[in-house]
Length: 380
Image 1 (tube, rainbow, N blue to C red):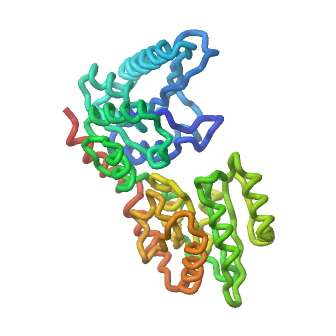
Image 2 (tube, rainbow, N blue to C red):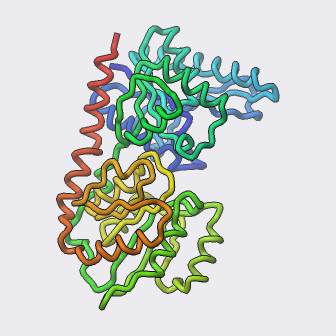
Image 3 (tube, rainbow, N blue to C red):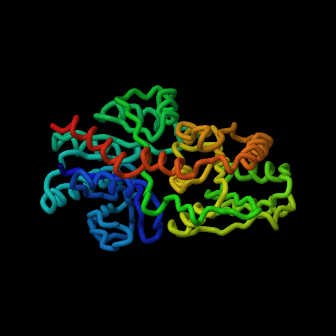
């Protein structure tokens, strides 16, 4: 079965981890189907012709999946840009059909790729499914026109795949009607796994947060909560991985709370470095105000790490009492209380069982099989 992944988010040389979760989906499906990725919707005023079509030959970026990028020359006239975008996508898919065979199904990612995917699907007479990951629905950042567009696109798609029940509920609250089926994100369990010999055993409680340094990730509430905790005969240290436009505000807050000796900001790190930190931490913390799934939380679980998360729209759907604690977002006191309880019961967490459960739910074999089953039901 030939499946075309169609996505505006995908790793590039400039943003090597942009849309990396889409690539993990493609790798999972590749176990069952012939997969080609078309990275679409890239407007550029500098290209010589009105469109360009290039293969991604960087092995670190394509990760063994045939991947292509289609670009179009943007115009100052919005309607012209849209027509060029649609035309460039159709021409690219025509070229791909000659090289790799006609697709049997298009799997688009996020609603913004919907029009081009649906029009191509109608012309070729093949089904179109759309995965939705965008947190903007919960954050309320879409205009009325965009919401109306989402309703049309998702109604026309054969199936819509939100990454969590919470995201599906949010879409339905926006009066979006579709054939929904929740399909979670995929975790690379070759990178994120439990290794007993690397579990921490000293007197320091090692906390880990992996997050962009922006307000809606809620790190300020984590810092305020940590200021309140006091663990007998235990010291603590928080490692923060990530960067962002509000980095300075976060640094300043830690300094004002007199936590500089307890908090280390590492900036951006490579995936394998993050995985190593997860295997040597005690507790992973996600204090977000909004999420659609939280891949990093699932990666932490796959590493056998107990987690403290907020009820922010994603992780509360898969974090159980055996794997961690869920608290209300934006509540520093709740974070402090939950961390205190988790530290007291750290020895009781079965890290091997936490990792096993995450692999069974989010591993590429499981999610790939789920998607393949869905594809075969739609294949015409």
